[in-house]
Structure formats: C-alpha cells, structure tokens
Length: 250
Image (tube, rainbow, N blue to C red; front, top):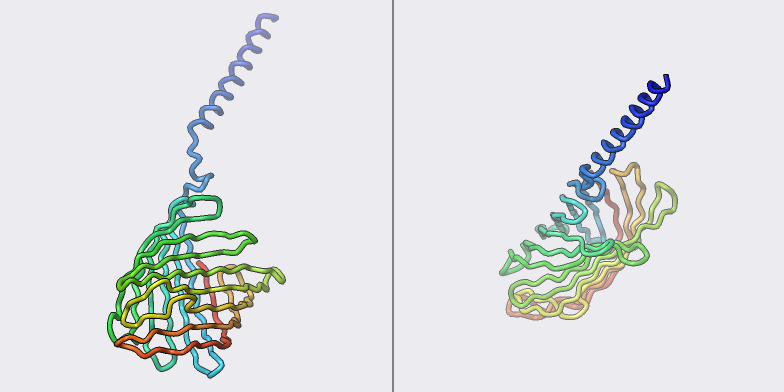
C-alpha cells in the first residue's frame, strides 16, 4: 500500500511538471506581435462642410483621409477639395509614408499632387512633402508639413486641434491652421511670410462614433498674392467664416 501511494504521488508530480513545461513552451513560442501593435488596421474619415464669409460668398470643403498599416509603419492617403460658388474646384491628393519615431509622434514623407483651375499656367503641380504627425503637449493633435515644389516654392503648414468634452455627446474643438511661405517664384506666387491663418471653434454632436454633424465658426486672414507677369497683386483679406458640416468615420 505504501509503495502504491508513493507511485501515485510521483505520477501526480510528473503530470504537474509536464503541464508546467507545456505552458512555458507555449509562452515562449507565442507570437506577441498582435498584442504590441504589430497588427495591420485601417481607418478612414470623410468630412464635408459648407462655409460662408461676411460677404455671403460660400465654399464647399471636402476631405477624405485613410490610414493603413501598423502602429509603427503606416500609409496615409489624403484627398482635399475646395469648391467656391461659381468657380471650378481646387483639389489636392497626398500619399505619405508614416514611421513612428517617438511616443505619440510619426515622421512622414511623401508626395502631393494639386490642381487649381483658376491659374493661367501651371494648373497641375507635384510637391515633395516632409513632416510630423502626432500629439503635442496638452493633447493637441498636430500636423506640421513642409512642401517643396517647382519654381522654388517652399511652404510650411501647421494644423493643430484639441477636443474638449462638454458631455459624452457634445464636444467643442478649437483649431488653428496657418501657412508660412518661405519662397515662391511661380506664376501665381503668394506673398512671403505668414500668408494665411484660420483660427476657429467647431462644435459637434456625436450621434455615434461614426456619424458626427457639426457647426463651425472661424476668423480667417490671407496676406495676398504677389504681382507677377500672370497676376496682379492682391490685398490682405480678413473676416469671419460660418458654416456647418458632417464627419463620418469608418
């Protein structure tokens, strides 16, 4: 009887050790990439809004952004269109490679194609793009880009915004968007320095995390264009913008 109990005890210990070894082996051979940002995901945002200025002139602005990739490496595709009343649309498309370089920050590089039917010449252009995308201190989501194009065009653009929750459904979002022209010798050259800026406040209601109507109030500034052989010099413009729109996420 004593020998039998001893044998049973040894068998139990062997079974426990075998189970433990199997667990250790499974842990060491488990693929952790799906738990640490290695999975590929896709997200898109479509936004369209109608804005009017103090003179009653309106413009329809539309934007589509798609992100595809992992937490470390992504591809951004951005499409943008502006359609002012009684004018042909301006549109641009960007394709960017995005690489995570620090907590909350990605370095990005790519190309931008833009088309402006109002230009007399060079209606279509391609620019190189270099920039940063991420979360600045105090949770300001920020995009900072340098565009380098033909005719010594070098422009810096900064867009930053922050969500402030009033309730779980009502959210206000202050934002800032400005352009600094370092140089421009094109036929439709812009004046150098701080060329344009827009400071605004968006208020949206989240019907769901996918459907969000909003209203927008902003103050805009535009320094104007330089005089060239193809265009006359334009004066500085300032004024208020009012509008509403719809944002979809999927």
